[in-house]
Length: 64
Ligand SMILES: [Zn+2]
Image (tube, rainbow, N blue to C red; front, side, top):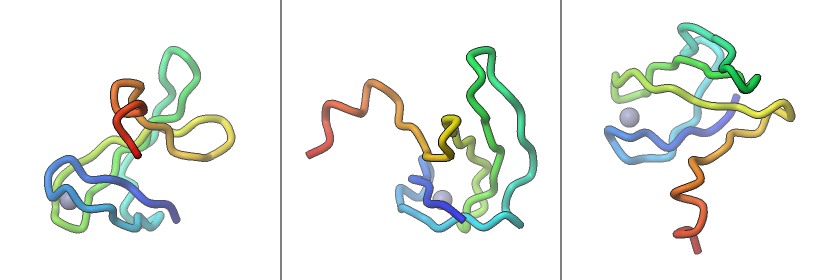
């Protein structure tokens, strides 16, 4: 179980394993999970090797 910031409903949602519809590995070795948000929107979640979700670099500097 982990959290995901949905790009459609703009909420931070808890994601359970049952919501994962697919998993693939990026060229850089990052695991990318395809999930379905509670709002019904398909989303992709990128995870590092430590299992923690990673944010896009463009968003990292804007957070407080
Ligand atoms: Zn959503």
